[in-house]
Amino acid sequence: MAKAKKISYRKNFVLIMSFMGLITISLIIALYVGYSLTKKFIENEFSSLKIDVLDQTIEPYNTLFQNKIPELSFYQGFLDSLSASKYSDTVFKKYPFVSHILFYDSDVSNHPIRDGLKVNRFSIGLKTLYRFGRNTPADSIVLFRETDPQLLSLSLSDEFNKIGLKFASFLESADTTKALTSDQIFKIFFSIVPGKISYMNIPRREDIKIYQDLMFKNQPPSPLYDLDIFSFELNPYKLSLKNTHPELYQNVSVKPLSYDPILENQNLISTEITLPGAFSDYKLYLSSDKEFLYHEVNLRFLPIALAIFAIYLILAFITFLIYRNLSINKKLFSLQYDFINNFTHEFKTPVSVIKVAGSNILNSKNLTERELTHYGKILDEEADKLNDLMNKLLSFTQIENKAISVKSKEVNLEVFAHNMIDAFQLKYPDYEIELDLINVEFFHTDPTLLSSIFHNLMENAYKYAQQGSKNLKITVYTLKNKIIFSFKDTGIGIEASELKHIFKKFYRIQNRYNQQGSVGLGLAFCKELAIFMDGDITVKSKPGVGSEFDVILPYDN
Image (cartoon, rainbow, N blue to C red):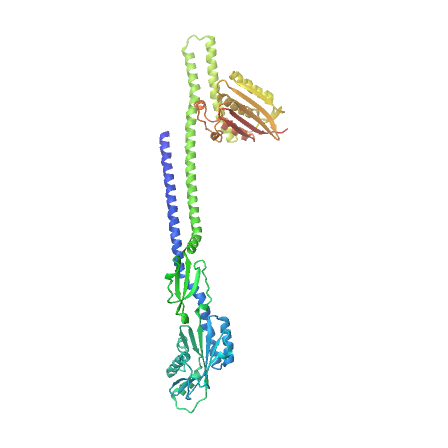
C-alpha cells in the first residue's frame, strides 16, 4: 500500500515537473513570437506611417493650392500692383515655402500686340510683369512693361504663353451654357511644373462668350478686358516638416529624387515618399538609427512581456499549489500511516500483556498471593495505559470540536505542582524535578486541563532525557497580565528544523528515542489545550543541551 502510494506520488511529481517544463517552454516561445510580431509591426508602421507625416507636412501646400490661389478669381482680373503686393504678402506670411510670386498683369482684346499670344483675332497681351518676394528691393519688382523697348525674355514668357494657349484652346470649344467642372478648371487655368504653380483667374460665362466672339467674329477694335495670371515659385526646403510619429522617425528631411541613401550611415533604417504636385522633383526622406527603433520595439514589447509573464506566474503558482497539496497529502498519508502503526503498537502491547497475564491466571491452578498481586498490578497498569490513550484521543477531538468548556476555579499552584511532581517521582524514582514559584501562589484556571499540560510536558521531559540525567526544572512566574509555566529539561534537545513541526498532530521526530511508544499527539495536545485556554506554548531548544517549553496563559490578579 505505502509503496503504491509512493510510486503514485512520484508519477504525480513527474507530471507536475513536465507541466512546469511545458509552460516554461511555452513562455520562451510566446516571448519570442511576441517580440518577433512586435518587431514586424514596427517595421510595417515605419514603412506605412510615412503617409501621415507627408499629409501633415504637405497640408499647407494643399491649402494654398485649393483655397488661397483660387481667391484670385474673386478679383476678376482687376488686381493692380498694390493689391497684388498685399495679396502676395499674405501668402508669404502664411506659406514660407513660397519664395516668389510673378504677377502677369495682362488684358484680352482683338488688338495687335507686341508681347503675348494671338489666336485668330483673339489676343492676350502682357502689360506689366511684377516679381514679389521677401525683402525684394523696390527697383527689382517690375520685370517688364509694355512701354519699355526691352522685349520679354523667353524664360519669363514661357509660363504666360503656356497658360494663354490652354485658355485659347478652351475658348475654341467652350460651352457657355454649362458651368465649368473642377476637372476643367484644373486643366485649363492651372499649370503645375516642378517648383512652380501658375494660375489664371477664371472668367465669368459672359466674359467667355465675349472672348469667343473676339476670336471668331470680325469686329471693330474691342475694349481691353483685364486678365491676371500668377506664378508661384516654391522652395520645398522651406516646407515645415511635421514628424507626427517621433517614436518611429528620428530624422525627417526633404531630398531630391536623385538622392541615394547608400552613402549614409549603415546603421540607419530609412524610407521615402515622393512629394506631390509642384514638389514632385523631391521626396520626403525619413530615417532612424537601428538602436532607436530597437528601443521602440522593446518599449512596445514590455507590456506584452509583462502580460505573458503574469500568465506564466499564475500557471506556475497553480502548479505550486498542486505540488504543495500533493506534498501535504503525502505528509498526511505518512503521518497517518505512522499513526496507525504506532497506535496499533500502543494498543497491541498492553493488550498482549493483559492477554499473557490473563492466560497465566487462567492456566495456573495454584497462585500465591504475591503472584496474584503481581498479575493484578500488571493488568491495572496496562488498562490505565489503554484508558489514558483513549482519553487523550477523546479529549483532543472534544477540544478541536469545542465540545467542552473551561471550568475555572482557584488553584493553589504550590499544592497543584507538588501533587504532579510526587506522582511522577513515585512512578519514576530516578526523576529529579525542581519547582520554583516566583511571586505567585494562586491562579484561576481549569485544573484538569492544566494537569493534562503538566502531565504531557513532564512525561516528554523524562522520555527524551538521557540515562543518568533525568532532570526537570519547573518555574512559574508572572509577566504583566500573563502567567508563564516554564519546563526546562536537560534532554537530547530538538533540531532547529524540527521546531516548527513538533506541535503538529501525528508528527514525530525520527530518532532512537521515538521509535516506539509515541503517536505524535502529546505536544499537539498541549498546544491545543493552551490555545483553548486563550494562551499559547513556545519552545527553545539546543541539541545535546536540552529544551525549554513555556506555557503562557492569561493571568488576572
